[in-house]
Image (cartoon, rainbow, N blue to C red; front, top):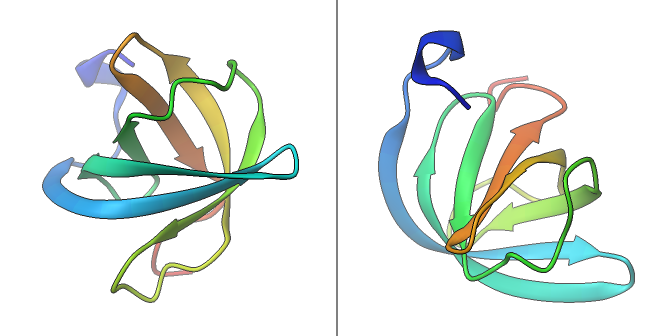
Length: 86
């Protein structure tokens, strides 16, 4: 996503992530996070518009619904269906 279009600042965060998608659990690492999305490395099996449940270890974030909005050779960009404070 183009930085000018972002509504929330991204913060670097390196934590293990668990993505539940298509009856699978895929592990990755959160590279950065915002109130409305995250970039997760090691999880590029999904396609744009896939809907997943997203959990970040050691945080209250559990099974947050998200949509894949970007796929790169390094990982995936997720957009949460709500902000982290909702």
